[in-house]
Image (tube, rainbow, N blue to C red):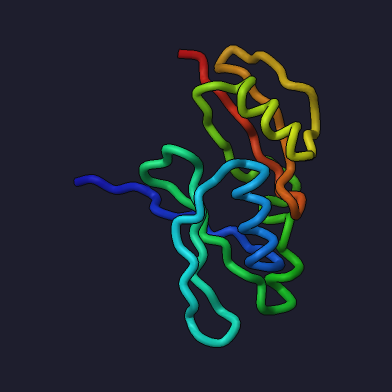
Length: 130
């Protein structure tokens, strides 16, 4: 048996601003942007070189969903972006005004820094020690 997580739904306030931020600030690729009728779209972005897991950008449409935009994990780190070159990606993100919650640090498992996406969800940028 083989399984993998294909997409993770991330609740966003606006499709276009989310696409712009993820493709510009993080260098993600826009994999799909398909109208679904009305104001609904199927929008998928992925990190460069990603083979499996992608982000489904899901526009908040109810008051409950809008309340979760930017706080999907109650203030904890929500997603971990693994990289093969921490300092390259960290510098690129700095150039695109990504908000960092701390200074980069070396841990036994690798180099890591916590950052926020455009809505305030917390992420780790992480290069694992090989």
